[in-house]
Length: 599
Image (cartoon, rainbow, N blue to C red):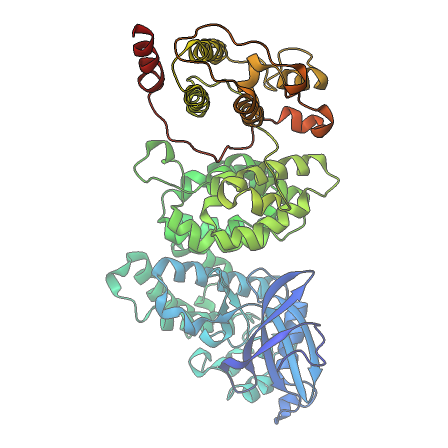
């Protein structure tokens, strides 16, 4: 069907129907509003329907009008309606027919659901003076959170509009088992009661839903089923209890139903009632199976009114938003949900809440984010959570920005800095800690230089000894550097050292092994030594005369481009890829020299 000429821009309606009834078909739909995806249910009916009752309004149009007028947490929520191409469209919150999920529900879930339907009927009769007139399984729907909602409002009428003629005309279309066979006679009762129609229908509903349950399933369940059969469907309407009395039955006075009812009606409670409720809520929730709590109450516990309540923030949410990582850990005994239950029931709701642009809600989520972020998959963190966090750092609220940055820091360990920070990154910091052992590469280069000098001399005269002594001096200097204590400052600078002083130190032979361009200086000096060195005859230990100034190799400052200051400081970030085979310096060099001198 798509979204052609619909009153809700961007809506996409599935072609396949979820359910088809006499007057309409139900379809799933989705709509993107303000960047958020919202799922809806669409009821589609004909504009013209045969029958004397539907001359002015079709059944779907009348149902739409009643949903707009009668608003209650236990009644399906109206969204929008429109006409298009001889069709009438009704958009409501996402629901599915109760009949499709009823076989999968347990006794506690059914008890909570029946209580919700009863609350909706109580509201209609006590507050709106209206009768539903068709309470049955087909008029009840469930949300994705498992909450039952009353629908099927096409036969609803005000007390003043109920007449024998109206009841007789609608009898054929209403659910037969829910219709009191004597309703027309009882309409003119002396008590003036108009609730007896829905009370009878509710009794029939309970009997039909609980008929498949074993008698020993629950003593309270069996007792309530008999109560509905004999009291709610009593032929004498004076003996039928009111909705107020039915709500007071012990079947609906269970702690779990009380908790569910309070959360549903939270907007109607005062601050004192809320404070007392949240103070004891966690202890009560621990008494029930976590799967029941998660499936039935997770949506209500993560509602806006709960999240913004101060008592709930202090006593409930820290326990609610922290999943158990180890069932045997005694320190986690106070927690309610395991990781599996958290993933199935709370994770989808949290993903939706992260799209809410409310500063107080976002602050609350991020305060506990590190406790439950591991529950999300990597794709969910990248696609859903991270984009919302990046929006948060651009807000003008300093508190929100600070908390968001802390959460981004937590994400780095999971997603990596490249995914969180983005952009091009480079290694701008080095490890300035002193080495604790002589560097093998340096020793290898010195030993190689000495061997080359020996080979060039053709013997083992005084030149070799002098070269060894000079290299040994350098070794001693290096050992002194390696044994330096750890630098006290994090930037690796003990004093005020200028860039010029650093550049001068690069040319100092005594500190040559401390800098990155040691290899370049070593190579230049070795090449100059081979080019100008005069071989010393065997046995001649006299020092060779100094070379003329014209033959000395002097480093030209103009040839070396000036280094930027940051590069001069970051002088150890490159790795020498030239690797030479290591050998025993004393075995290869000193031992032959010693043998030569002895001869």
